[in-house]
Amino acid sequence: MTLARNLLLAACTLGAVLTATAGEAEIRKNLPSRIPQFPPIEEITKTPLQGIYEVRVNGAQIFYTDEQGNYLIQGNLIDVNTRRNLTEERVEKLSEVAFDKLPLQDAIKIVRGNGKRKLAVFEDPNCGYCKRFEKDMKTVNNVTVYLFLYPVLGADSTVKSRDIWCSKDKGKAWGDWMETGAKPTTAAGSCDVTALQRNVEFGRKYNITGTPTLIFTNGTRTPGAIPAEQVEKQLAASAS
Image (cartoon, rainbow, N blue to C red):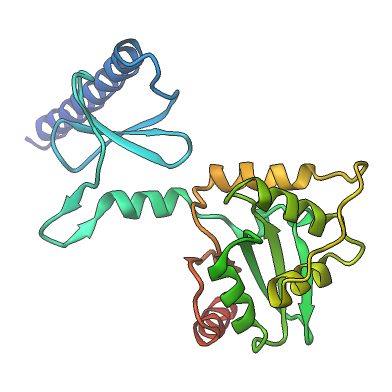
């Protein structure tokens, strides 16, 4: 009986795998043919909802479809029993950025005090919330901030980011602009600003949709202008 049961379980498992594989193949074939403008499919996985598959595109963009690719659903999948937003959890997981994988060479390094603690921030020079955040950050000491200029609010943001990046003292130029509105000197045409484009591409890849966005050394990612007290708490948590 044990052998028969094991063979039955193995057959059921194999059947489920073959069904999932067949479903994925149908989705990969049908969705692009039916929606030619649909982005390249990067991953297809089964969801807890029977017959519904998750389709991942553009890094962390999630859609749902049936196993034939006849229907496409855009929205949040919520477990009503646990009240968990499964889509939001999945996007957060996909959007995680390991601190040691950040392209720090494309950031402005600002050291305060002994600089032992570390924090990365993506900011736009025309972001009002960023200016409020920078004001609060003046009270946070003994930290190294890796500032990624992230000009996403318009053409003027790109101009200001370029001038700040090309300044002799980048950190001072950034602080002067954010704190007092002192405009940096116009950058020379020979200045290499490809780092700014790489920052934008990096942010899009990892779904950084707003500024400021903070990334701590333990992988915690926090959007928005959080107060200094919360920054201190998260710095302490990331160090533990």
